[in-house]
Length: 391
Image (cartoon, rainbow, N blue to C red; front, side, top):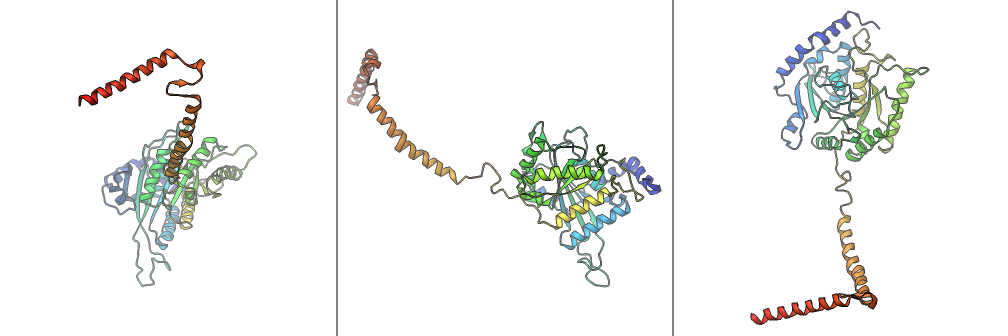
């Protein structure tokens, strides 16, 4: 589809003026913003995370239609008393987590690597603050002649995490760090990121789903949106785009359901490439006509409003703490077995088969060895008596 004059202008901004705008943002990073995570993480020394909180200066560079969808979602959340919204991104290496973060905030904030190598070694917490316009009839409009804005700013926080796989094994350190973060700050929604252009759910994928459920708890999937990247997929011959998307989403949802207690997350497709086709409003669109970014933020908002924020509860999740009550019982059983079974059996064996000098059967006795040991014992007793007499 053609993009029109407005689309070409936006494309020029992305290619030519992005670095200049990033420089402006970096200069203002030191400003204090009352984000939901920045203040709490400052005093939490055990968490090793990168933080960036600032005003959302790039928000005005989104297409006008996209801005409208974002504001509508933010206002809906604020009306429910949630002017702060935290999104956690999880997924394997190279699936597009950092690219999705950049797309959501409209900045080249996170480094990206298309070759499956994680570009970050610890979580990055990015908070952006944008003003909320009063909404007629909502909590932001109290019915007065001049509406009162109860929440002048909306804070969107994205938590980008390292990949969940190192080589061919699960990187559980990342999941443990996420658990520590969720103890400090509840997670409103989770984006579990994977690629659309993969045609099977591998054994390693299933290990990832199992690890997420085991470490963080199966309840986290109730706050999750499955985010499928590389949305400009060209389907296989004889297959429609809708069929390809449905097959991929259902495959992942079915695999997750095995470890989530049956929960099947909602899904949304995204395309993070700047070369993606666009509509006349310069919004990136998918082959089926879906406007990618607004659709993603709407799905995330729906999941956030439809569930309680995820908070990590360690009870029953750590293998180290699971079934600890059984430790004293096992120890007591061992003591009783030794005293009333093993010791008794050993004494009986010695009674019938031998003593301290060896077996009772004559053919197994070594008379010279026994005589030597008896003489050594008599000498030991003699020396002990001599010591006592000397005292």
